[in-house]
Length: 400
Image 1 (cartoon, helix red, strand yellow):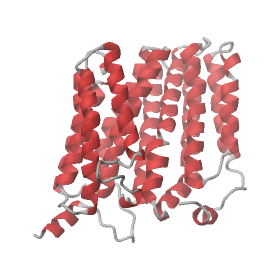
Image 2 (cartoon, one colour):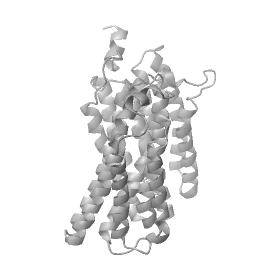
Image 3 (cartoon, rainbow, N blue to C red):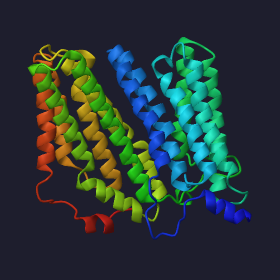
Image 4 (spheres, rainbow, N blue to C red):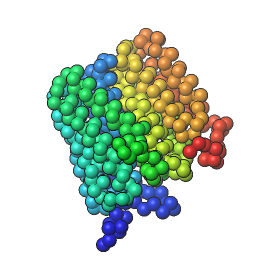
């Protein structure tokens, strides 16, 4: 077997004629992240404070970063290759260790958490680089990824070796390097920045994979809500709360997976520079959407646990702010993809924020019912005959 044939065996074909399928290995590896997102929701519930919410948000970004980089790799490499499948299996194992250590990542399990994350990031990049011969166009991309992941990895491991504020400061610096890397084009001395046009992703597969993570987050919402209801006992009030929580989750699902999802997927598929869109709209701007879903899930737990009590502080913030953040994140995502604003969603997000002064004077049941009703009305409102871009217009008049 020649070297060229071996490389082709590890990479997905890029003949431009068909969308690359999502494989069973990719779906299987996603199961770990259902657990990770559930861990984050439980972390917030265990500490309903500003600090607890900030820590969960910090860890959520790390979890998302670990997942999205694996998605980039699987968009290029064919999981049907035994070598690639082995790498993804290793990624799943290390991701499981990372997810298991999430509740105590900033305290007693910092070493396991940091070691798992660094092994995941550096190991995956090194493995991908080793599957490519010198001179291959993707080899240069992964060489850059290895250098940047090692640089941030040193700070992650250094932070694990200390405690308290010192750990947090080092980890904030490490995460800043991770988040800045794509925008910096993985700059290296003497080599400059990488162009996003060199990424050569398959847009349909990438968009569908990111949509799959939204399903993971929504599924976690169902799990948390259902488990809380089962534990509370399925009396009439709990059943009513469960129905309201489901309506809210279903509205969130529709607002993401309505007609606009197909538009954005098609846009990414035909873009002349899909790497840039995938970096901006999916790698970065999906994070607030996921965070909003996690916040909504926490709010639904609080609803079922004490439906007749008013919510205060962080409890009130996650019920209203989770849904508002979700809508704002969606608007930013659609703006980057279509260069159009969604005034309806921004108006409902503003209405949710304006409910805050009266939110702590009414029961959690009434407040969540109002949130679910607003989201549902928004979804129905958007079902009206489109006055904006048609699909043809969306695909022809955009800065891709």
